[in-house]
Structure formats: structure tokens, C-alpha cells
Amino acid sequence: MENLQYAEELVREFLVFRGFTKTLQAFEKELGTDIGKGFQVDSLLDLIFSVYIPKCQAENLVNLLHFFKQCFGSYEAELMSTLSKLEVSIIRYYIIHALQTGRKEKVMEFFNFHGNVLLQKHEDWALWFALPYHKNPQLDPEFRLYFSKEWINTLHLSVRNFLSKMLNSTRIPALLKISSEQNTVNRLKGDIKQLNLKISQLQALLEEKEIQLRQAKSNTSATTRVPTLGMSSSSNIKTGFQEQNVSSSPRFSHDICDPATSNIGERESSQYINDTKPAHSQELMSCMSKSERSNDFQNVQDTGSEMQGEEEFPEVRVDFQETFLGHTSPITRCRFSASGDNIASASVDGTVRIWTYEPSVSASRNATIYCGAEIMSLEWDCKSDRLLLIGTADGGIKAWNVDAKRVVCDLNSTKAFPSVLDLKCSPVEPIFVSAAASTRPGSTYFDKLGFASLTVWNMRTWKSMTVLPLGEDPPAITSLCFNHNGKLLAAAATDGMIHMFDMSAGLQITGWPAHDTAISSVLFGSDETSIFTLGADGKIFEWSLQNQGKVLWSRNCSSFCNLQSSSLYKQEMALDANGNRLLTTSNSLRAPIYQVGGSMGGMRTLPHTASITTVDWHPMLPIFLTGSADQSVRVTSLL
Image (cartoon, rainbow, N blue to C red; front, side, top):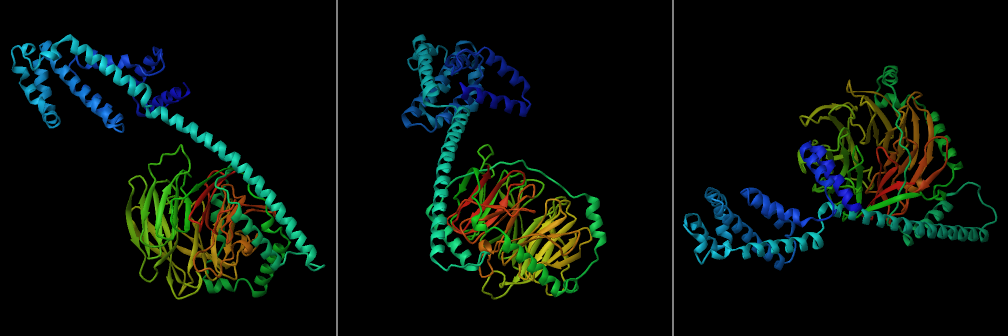
């Protein structure tokens, strides 16, 4: 009964959506007189033998029989053979009844429209074409049987028995299956939660034993220790967790908290632009003396040494976790769409897959895109879920329309800048910016990057609009970020510089040295009075935009994501919807989630079976993505 009510609600919803108000009224009226609350075979028989045939509604009759074939097309040959025989008999009864009631023109009309199809299916129909011209067909031995009451009654009974068997017991309507499958999914999710709880308990026990083991080892070692966490002990702790993670890797988990939004006012942004003077990279480097820079970095390091070790972070508490296993090589990028309903993930083999983790979201947009080169950047259109931009290592920029399921535009950066390192769409204007770089021989990811090119593209004409100025032979730009109104663009470079552009003027307005190493990722803070940077050495800084060069908050996650020696990946970080949690990629099986601001706390993600190479947060909910070198992508919702 519950499944039936849910299916009826779906029908109502569809009729209201399409504006079929008369059909909705008729539907409600029939529901009011429905007694059996199940399949009504008599109603269907009346439709065939009391409406369609007596009123000579041939097209409706043919469409209904065709519908039966579609419904039962997946059943065994014997049942389909029975349905074909019944179809022939019902059509012949239609012809006989039309002749008996003096509607010869209806018979002629039927043969004109469907005669060729009938002859192709059954050769014995040839004699029936002469039936309208026969004076006494009921006396002809070939047709006498079809005029008898016995044959008509037998046909009624046969159709009743067949439909009762097929629709009342053998086949469940698709609308009823939806509810049943949803119940099954909910039941399985409940089982998964119970299993996750057991896994968490076992992991907690295992970690407790690991700590006891480390303490026992430390008691037997030197009697004096440095009070802060040294490099060797950090390495030992990390190794211990990696061994533990390999032995206990959960498959699913999930978390919910209230999303919040906060925007900086347009007036404040404009004031910031007007108060800063244009400068080039060489001039900006002199704005901060070497001693000031070293003092800032020393303060950050001192702060980091006082922090709780990231390896000691508690594991996240999850509501659910879904694992996507559609890729066949390590994951390089994964991104939520603007609404969070769809996910795009890319792998080393040059494939992009579009999918959804939510059962209530249609899978009609799911697709696999073969790009023929390594995917270096992914970006969804900020204003809708329709367009996905893909940047490749051979200079290609593809625009994929998820509704049409095709590439609507295939752009190319210049041959001098073949690596499309990042793409960012404006949240307001129909434009996007590409950060491309030249290549050179090198051993690490950043060593292989040469000079930078920043190009602004029009998303309506799919043509380049301008190239943003960076000076002569500028170091590669690795990461881009727009502010909320699209007026400011932040660009992070391999020489440790942050560049800020006024997009209305197309000019650089300020910049400052943020890291001693290459910058891997840059993000505006939630209130847009600060900006976050992640360096190749694993250091995270939150810089003030009102007091340039001032560090507001910092963490040292080098034990997780120091990739200076990596030749494959760059690091990433992502902020949650209200800007309170910052998630980074990781060399190990788990990734850290830092509490932004004054708190030194944090959490660790559930483990993958290999390093975590890409991360993202849901635009509205406390749900995050982690892509891994183990070829999987996980959607985790916090509890």
C-alpha cells in the first residue's frame, strides 16, 4: 500500500508539472472510486472490448497493444508468442465487429494504415483484405469461426487470464519499483552505517594499541626528549598510521552541518582596489624586506611547532560515505558542480567521468569523456550545472554540455604554453580564465613548469578576449580564484608570489611574496577579507587583504602533503561552504581537515588505500570529495 501511494504521488507531481489539469481531475476522480487498490483487469478489458472496439478507435487499440509488447518484451519467448497470438485475435475481432455494425469504411481505413505491417508479420492476413467485399463472410468457412459467440467469449477469457498473470503477479509497474528500490537503498544504507560503526570501533581500538606500542617503545629509548614533536618522531607516527590504514580500510561513511554564507560588500571590495597601487612582480618583491619575510616565516614555523600534531587528529565522524570506482587509473581532479548534484572526476589516463552520488538525482547526465591527454584542470560553470570545462596537458580546453552530452567547443592554448594548469569561471560574467604554462625538463612537478600565460575567454563566442599582463618571462601560474563578484582574480605562481588582478580593467593591481617555495593552491576566504595559500612545502597561510603581508592564521601540514619532490601531482586545498574547515590533499592514506581561525584543532579523513591527490567541498553542505591514487573517489558527509 505504501508503494502504491508513493507511485500515485509521482503521477500527481508529473501531471501538475506538465499542466495536465483535466487528466489530473480524471485521475483524482478514478482514485476516489478505486476499491481494490490494485490491478483492475476488468477496467482494462472494458477499455478494449467496450470502448476501443465498439467505437472503432483503431489507433488507440494499436497503441495499447504496442504498449503491452514494450512492457513484456523482456519475458521469455513463450509468453511473447502468446501475446502475439492475442494481438492478432484482438485485431481480427475489431474487423469482424466493424463489419457486423455496418462500419465497412473503418475496415478499409484500418487496412490502408496498417495493411503492410500485417502482411509482413503474418502471410495469412492476405485473405482478410477481401473481407470488406465479401457479401456473406459469416458463411465462408475461412471466416465463419470469427463470427461465432464461442470464439469471442474465448478471446475475452484468454485476454483476461493473460493480463491477470502478467500484470497482477509477474510484472511490477516501474513506478512501484521506484519505491521498492528506494526502500532497499535505505535498508542497505542502514546496514552500511552499522558496519561503519563497527569499523570505527575497531579503528579506535587499533589506534589505542598503536599509541600504547609507541609509548612502550619511547620508554625503552633515550630518557630525555625534545618537548616539541621532532622530525623523526613525526615520521614514525606517520608510518604507524599508514600501516594501520592499510589493514583497516572502510568502504563507506557521511556528515551534516548547517551551511552558512557570508559575502564581502561591494563597497569594501572597491575601496580595497582603490587603496592599492599597480605594481609589477619585481617592484612587489621589494615591498617586504628579507628580514621581515624571514621573521614572518619564522613566526609561522614557531606557531606550527606548538600545534597539536596532525597525526593525532581524531577521525571524522561520518553520516555516510559513497565510493565511486569507475576509473581505471589514479585520480587527478574531482569537482562538485555549482548545485552539488553532479560530480566530475578525472584520471591520469585522460578520461573524465560525470556522475552523481545522490539516488534522488537523475543519472541522465552521467557520461564518460575521453580527452586523449592527461587532465590537468576541471571547472564547472558557476551559474549552472550545464557546462564543464576540461584543461589538458596538450593545450586543449574542452567545453562539455552535460545535457547534450557532447563537446560544444574545443579550444587550444598557444603551442608555447601546452599545459593548462587551471581554469576558473567568473561567478558573474560569461567568461573564464585559463592558466597555461610552457614546459621544460625537470624532475618534479614544479620543475617541469616554465613560463605563464593567463588568457580570458568569452563563453558565448568561445574566443579569447585578452591576455592578462604578468611581465617578461613570468613564472608559471598554478592556481586561480575569483572573488564573489568576479571583480578580483587571485593567481598563485611557482616563485611564491600572489598576483591580484582587477578584471574590469584587465590589470594587475597588487601582489606579494607569500611562500619561499612554489604555491600550489590559492583560495579567497569566506568573508573575502583574507586569502589562503598552500605552498609546495606543505605550509598553509591565511593572508590579510586589508593589511597586506600580514599572516592571520597558519598551519604546517608538511607531514601530510609535502610534494616538493613529486613528479606527478600538485597539492590542493578546499574550504567548506561557511569557510570554517580547510581540507588538503595528502601523501598518506588520510587527509587533514583543519579548523580555520584561532582553533588549533582538526580532523582526519577516513583512509583510502593510497595517497589522496585531489579534494573538494560541496558548495552548500558539509560533504567533501577525496580522489586518490587508488583510482577511487569518495563522497563523505560529516555527522
